[in-house]
Length: 321
Image 1 (tube, rainbow, N blue to C red):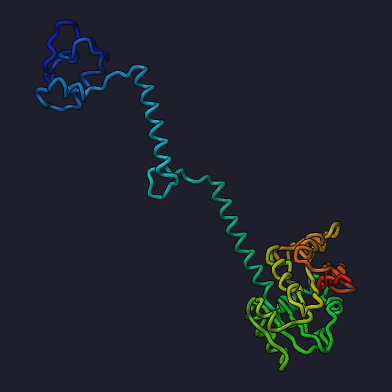
Image 2: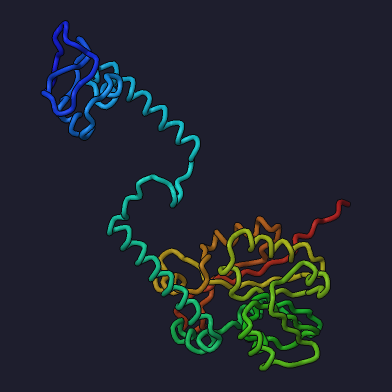
């Protein structure tokens, strides 16, 4: 109910409990006086100014616009002062949608299964005995032929695993194996023992290359476990070692039209399986020469998985004559 006070009415005070339309400022348009009085309680007399403060006035269009602009400015100021929302802020936190919750649960389950899968495949018993059953057998004769290690060779095996290289090497002066898997290194030390055989359970460093001075570097099943930057860094370390004359690599690879092999490569523990061109591009970045590259089966007769074998060497700069 809106009330206009007629001209000439007294405007000094309004008695609580009186009629709903008395004793308001002359010519002022106000909201429901009775509601205001009910909120004020049982006080007998209210001064005119206090009553005006308690009774909400009707807002005109200019007032509404001014309030909207002021609210916008306050909102911008708050955004500048608090660029990030914290859990303790007054910002309303909307509950997540059920679809988002379902996606988070599925991602967590997938990560757990992937981690379990990686651990199972990474166990030396599974890797050496069960994996060959899936890929149709393992025979690395071609790889070690490309390595071409003789009785005077100093062999550096990066990612040596359980030391299966000794099933194919026929002679060497020194052998140095590096791997980060403690279980695999322990098995390698147990299976192959000799005064000229050394295993290290850690990452290879530049100081190791300077100390060992290898002539043959073996990277069997390693590069598809490393991101591009680490592959290039490792190959450049080998390239910068003058004693190295041959590097042999073997990795799972994606090939056009080879659906079975590609599926096996997809389920490989290595998370960085590439195409042939992808591997060759990394070799080029490391300033190494590709002597040859070839695609071979995991086993020459019954192998279902295909691997890329690369034979690399130093880039020799010919002296000008």
